[in-house]
Image (tube, rainbow, N blue to C red; front, side):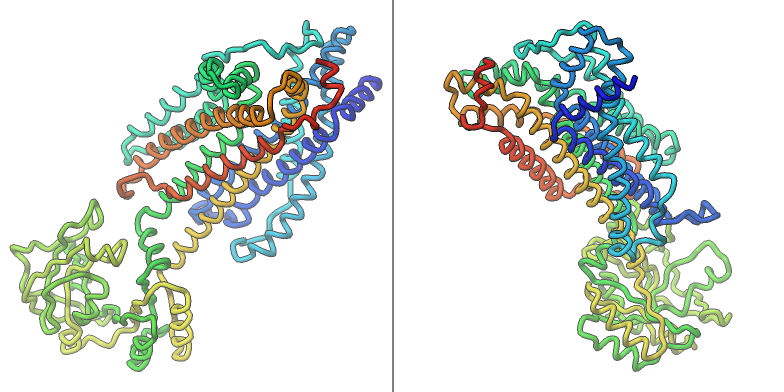
Length: 637
């Protein structure tokens, strides 16, 4: 056995520096990225003793970080299969020399385990370094330090085991093979490669037809299964679809087109394997960007994002002891450059609400100019209370809320004054209509107002000065700082209601784009490494073409086309399945507006980066000039 271990070590050295360093770097990155994806949710949103008190953002963040596993597995697969043809020929030679199957497996295992173990050990160090960097850079986001525990050991062991399994899988095909390689054999991929496609579409259809009020844990499992099946479809179907295109290209009239078609026919699976990670990454990016759009644009969260980024925004200023807000403070707040107005928060409410009745209209106390800051209502008069109806409210914006009957609107309403127990009766002289669509142009999710009570009427009936005011200001953090500094002079408390939800949105944005960026980087690394390995393995084939006088531009064009076809196929499959997944997910969100919530410019940018990066790497790793062909390559031919 010792001799076989030594033989495996020699096989590691004979594999070359490219294979050795690629496996080491690939395993190191895998350990670091997977451990970070495991530990970050716990550091950002620690789980307390009560499971109901866990931050609701933990689930989406953990799920988003988990998808980094897909390109990482593709990276391990790619580095494990580098220079596989040379290695398999050497292992096949051992079979011909009479070495048993177990002996061959032991030699192959030692060959991959040496760099994999070294890479995992290096990955532990990389994780510790990234942990220090993130602790310093992302301190405001982290609720506690990133833990170093059993997860690091589990991930390191799993990466080594996965690298060994993926590298040893082809060894079972060595029995009975000779040492020769037949490059002209055309292998047609089987139709069985399309098996995951109906599974993915079937699960997505099941999710799509599920009513929103019947969503359960099974629905989540179906979505997860559909995502896995969709990723498997991208991986397995590309060689099959590429082979169909290659058959047409091989019959072309242009030399570079025929060369590309023939290359894809004879090496279709190997060429398609290079773009596997890029296709899966495109699917991940599509779904992640769509999920981010869905997260941002659902419910009141969209209104808060609109307030912070586009304006106007609300800033609440209140007295800690329920004392009235000083009048001079309100005047100074209104005089700030970016402030549009100051609205007193209501101190009166319908008596029916205080008594626990079912009729509970929402009251606005102020002036008509203050009402115009939050609602588009025509016909308002400062000396007259009025009911407000809502025209053209979209969807379920104001569903399940009380609505006044304009034809039988009460002409008098009882109002309670704060918590004093006192009340008064106000005459309501008219019915106004709020233009909800116009209001939504200013406020993405406007507040519901059913009854307008002039502040003069409220004061005449004993209503005290309000203990809090609502500052309406344009977007930006500078005005929030100005309001906070001014309020501190009076000992007031300041709260921007949009900021907690907006901070969650920012956290999701950082998480999603970090995952997308890391996935693209890993996928391009897989492609570059695989392209370098393929360029080296195809040196004899290029020598044959050079020997018969094929110009460099012909080789360059055929190489670009042979890369572009499977890449375009993978991206098309990923976009189609991503669209289907988002359509099914969108069906479950009743508050979402029409259309897929995908940032088109962001998605186009991702696809352009992937395409340009892949084509650039493909051309940069191909030795096209005659000087790159070694003399022994021509002698072999």
